[in-house]
Length: 334
Figure 1 (cartoon, rainbow, N blue to C red):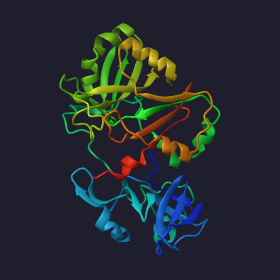
Figure 2: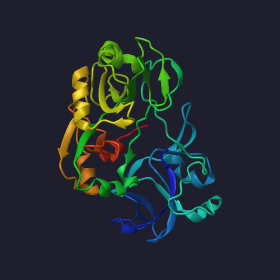
Figure 3: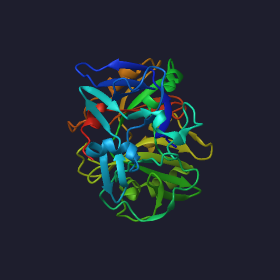
Figure 4: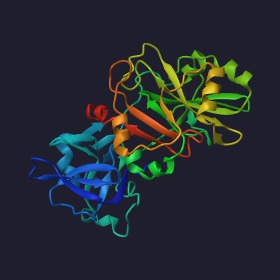
């Protein structure tokens, strides 16, 4: 599970030009705007990642005018978003550890999400009929949830010098199709969905004729992709009909994910689209700053793309992370 809230140490403090009351604290790969003088380099604090949803608590009341949200999906609380203050990008919230006496005994790096009652902010991914839920995602069927590189800078070193590939992060909802022991099924990110022709999560099966194709293929596999189109997220691609962009294939019997080139071959055999490839290379050498710049850009529609996903070419899940487009994050309205 993603650690939305953790105890972290300040790597550096830098000034914000023309600001008498604010400065920038650097935590992991993130930068947060904080009160001037509140932290010094080496101090510990509590870091709340972007998309944390904080409960109503007097300690967070200063966020009310900018961050309070109340709806049926999330309840009441404060949503942490990417923001810009005095020209400085701020991604997350960083507060003094002393403000949280209940965290006594916790240490640097500890996940305190549950302790502080923080949840992930949920935006419904689709306004159309996703389908009838018939249970949780079956055991062993993988969920897709890439980590943001700023929270795992060590992955840059793990990938350095290795063959890699970079794909476009598509704006949609995760859709899973599996074929195991002659049974075909579909899942959303967390739930299994009933076989119905008008279900969004079964659209890939009917659109691409996968019942017949997977039976003919005859191997136990799990395919995961992004369903994009009308009524899904913001449809930044401006598609007129749903398209399923595959980005993962798991060989069920071996338990391993197939390498990128093999994924392309299988999708070709099944007649399936894949996420757009932006770059592949023999030796990864990007810095965080270079990746953040590379994550910027537009979809063919002209709208800001969501970002990029970077992976090990030969072993996609050995090293895998996303880099989000800060231009798109700053324009979020929800």
